[in-house]
Image (cartoon, rainbow, N blue to C red; front, side, top):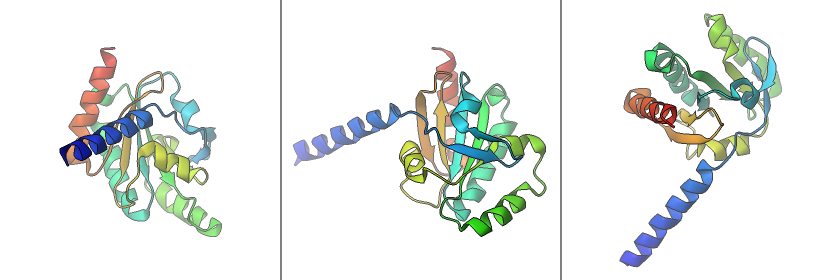
Length: 171
């Protein structure tokens, strides 16, 4: 029985290592400010933190994450991007959703918030999505390598994100 548990643990670690080798999906999205580009192109050559939401419920958590990360002086030189997955929303509703998101949002936040309507399966795999209720976060080094990923509330994980970025700076 212990060998079985150990084997399952090793399989989990191997799967996690394989996921950490994933590259960012090349999906083109639109920022809330109306600029079309691939998220990968906007962060190329820079350390970055990506925060994604896959449902309305997780969108609130992603917004809280973005506010906390933007206010953290340790992360001032890091590119922050919020990714809103709207592929499952009907086309006629997407405009209303984007308009509601823009209201009261500063221009800088609109420039770094991307709406994606394609490749949701690839993004779910990249973020390691296991449920739609949480915001998902990844930390990337300047080479685009995935350093850390997780999901949950920012007050539980922000220090971990900061530590992953500090370690990336030492490489």
